[in-house]
Image 1 (cartoon, rainbow, N blue to C red):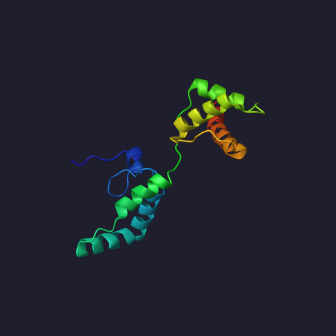
Image 2 (tube, one colour; image 1 turned 180 degrees about the horizontal axis):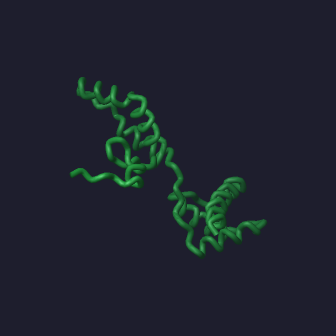
Image 3 (cartoon, one colour; image 1 turned 45 degrees about the vertical axis):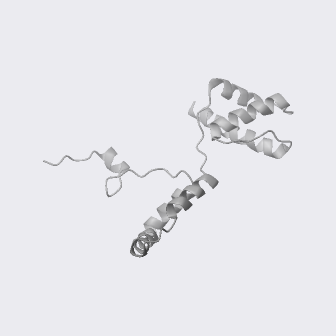
Length: 139
């Protein structure tokens, strides 16, 4: 006797029973679009018929590395408190910038370095404040 899928399982599955994975970057998104439009099937057929690798997988990985989607990590209590204190800062010193960069790099899986560019630093602070505001909205 065949088991029935629950509504929650059915909602998370595709027609073939596999879960859709979240895109890690632009490469994954392009692959989803080409699959949905049938382009990927045509390219796969041609590659199989000719024996020539299309390079799609390598291109997808390269695009994912060049253009990843930012999926921030959770803030620790200490990081949250520090970011909250930056909202009131008018001048950011070297020590504060170092701490901002350390938090930014961990949360966004980045490798930013100290900068003399005020707008670059302000952008990092704004991104961290947007993560902090997500905590504030949750209560």
